[in-house]
Image: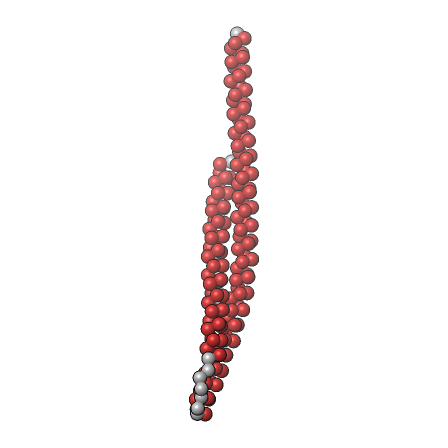
Length: 140
């Protein structure tokens, strides 16, 4: 029984480590998504900024500048969508890892209870044997 509990404890430790790693990945991915959102907000602010244009060259430069900014916004939006999909996948994996960790914890608890019951039964047998010896000696 001790060997089973030791093996289960090692398994629980491995699963706990996996959950911690997955939590780190989720946090990283959430931060990545937030960076993309912040980039999109900043780029949109730059797109809305205008200054008075007096020459056709200035107007052309501003149009090219804004077109480039819009392309960058689109790129950041695509990257955000991919990052959010990845985050959702990682969160599903995290939930599975957490369930797996809980299952092992419940198995360990059940094995510990079973082992404790066996120890209690052994102790009761010893106590019954001692009581029988005492009774036998008292009779003789």
